[in-house]
Amino acid sequence: MRIRHDRERCVGSGACAFTLPDIFDQDEDDGRVLVLVERPGEERRKAIEDVAASCPVFALTIEND
Amino acid sequence: MTAEVTTAPVEAPPAFPLSRSRCPLSPPPEYARLREEQSVSRVTLRVSGKQVWVVTQHEQVRQVLGSPDMSSNWKLPGYPLQVPLPPEVLESLELPLVAMDPPDHTVRRRALIPELTARRMQALRPRIQEVTDEHITAMLAKGGPVDLIQELAVPVPSLVFCDLIGVAPDNVGFFRHYAEQMVNRDISPEEMGAAQYEMEMHLQGLVAQKTETPGDDVLSRVIIKNKVTQELEHNDIVALARMLLFGGFDTTANIIGLGTVALLQNPEQLAQVKADPSLMPRAIEELLRYLSISDSATARVATKDVEIGGVLIRAGEGIIALNGSANRDDRFFANPDELDIHRDAKGHLAFGHGNHQCPGANLVRVELDCVFSTLFRRIPELRLAAPVEELEFKHDQLIYGLYSLPVTW
Image (cartoon, rainbow over all chains, first blue to last red; front, side, top):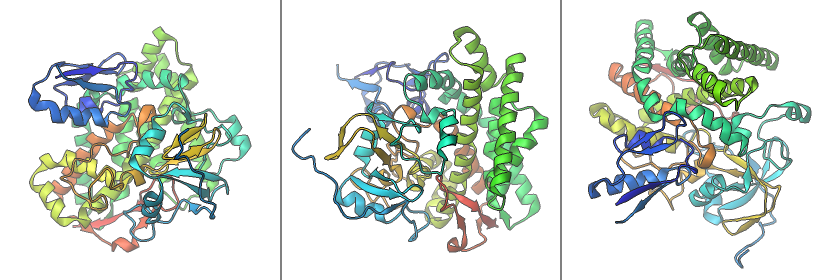
């Protein structure tokens, strides 16, 4: 599993970084999403899918390897 | 356009806002009927007599709020204004962030969001905890019954706001007084106008002062960064301060008040949160969903012909995407009319959706966590000091809440 993020779409809601701070953060400079762990373990899939679904601009997608 | 496109039924559209009469913690019962029939229907705005669309299902509310063909601009003729604004006032109004479209909106939002990141909001936790504790200590010293709105729900967010934007300690009293006036129904429109004007002068002065001598606060950091980027004018920065004020004061106070009532009305679930505070973050998302205090504040005007839920919305037509209705849509949430602190309520639209989603959402989450956890830990016997039916709900306001909330212990 690989997390893809679209910085152009991101509006910096921080929903991802608030919910899963070990996987997502926000750029100090512009507030947009930073993916800290691009390839998290399979056991995190559900949590990451939930966060991606609650992104207000759907800037996160999960790719299968 | 597809073959399913239909036109709206011709019967007289119901007057909007609809009444919450049945249960003050639930959205108007009429929403359920509208949602069942069709996601998109017509209503007549009480404030202007204009016919606009309302959207009631979760999927289409998200579609409207995420659409690039929907404008937030209050000045466009079809925009569904829900407060009385004389045309000359509207004409001269400097549009706030919430009423801007890209690219103006994008530039201003991006200037602000680095200051409101999840990390920064979590870092405010010790200070929010301190402010919460001080006010609960004062409540306990006073003894019940007290008005929770005046004693806790209003002061905590207003003091956090003052910290955030760097209000000097001797000016905090002014902001506190302003916040109290905003929930006071007994003051005249003239007094209200005067209070707004005074606040405006205060914010102007604050931005001027931060430009001169920056400190360690949100406004100062925006100003410092802007000296390099040169994207914003003085007035844009005042507008950001104003947005934080209007967006962060009243809304947070409202959800603290209503959330307290909702938890007290569901004693079994409250007992579970008291026993296990790790349930609180989930409970907070559920309260946000269940109460949806900004239900009709998510409004747009179409800039192109768009099909939403099988209905053709013409360019120039107003549309209110009812997030409170979306949050009770059983297509998205099981048993949506039940408060269930164990449910995964992520995906609720209480903060809106799309590029205008509330930029202060994570601050609210931290504030609610501190306030509810501390309130029920330090005053476990907290109870309402008046029957729910007698509480003064803000039926006449765009943002729902309580004017007062008598509690005792």
